[in-house]
Length: 177
Image 1 (cartoon, rainbow, N blue to C red):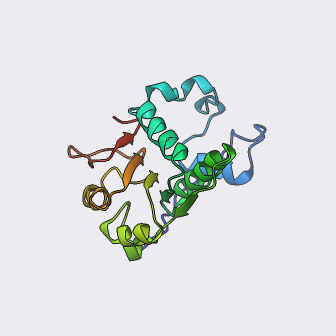
Image 2: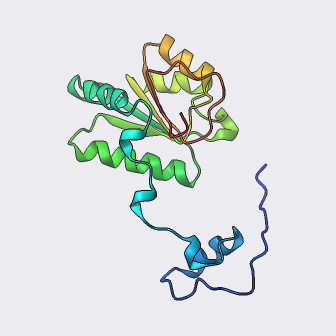
C-alpha cells in the first residue's frame, strides 16, 4: 500500500526570487533545502558519462542490435524517474532513426519490482531480442537469468544501490558500481 508522508514546510522561504515554481520551492523546503546556496545547478557536478560502469559495453550491444534490426524493449519503473527514463530512452533511440523498439512499464503490484520472472513471457510474446531496464533491474537476479535462458540480451541501467550479488546481465550501467 502506498502511504503519503506529510512533511513540515518552514514558514520562512528564502527561495523566492529564484524563478522556481511554488511547487518546486515547497519540495525543496520540505527536504531541508532552505537557502539558495544549497542549490547547485552546475553541470560539472553531474557524473560524466565516461565514468559510468560498462557504458561502452552497453552502447556496443545497442548498436549491434540496431545493425541487426533486433527488437529492443525498454522496461521501466512506473514512478516519476522510471517513466521519464522510459520516455527519454525511446525518444533517444528513435532519434537515431530506429523504430524496432517498444516499452513495457509493469505495475509492480501485479508483477513485482524490476525485471521480474513474471515479465519474461510477456517480453517473449513481444519478440524481444534486447531488454534495457531503466530505473530498475539492479536486484533482478531471477528475472535476468530467465530472460537470458530465453535467449534475450539484458542491459540494466539503474541508479539504485546494488547488493553484493548482481544480476548476470550483458551489461550493468549504474553510477554506484
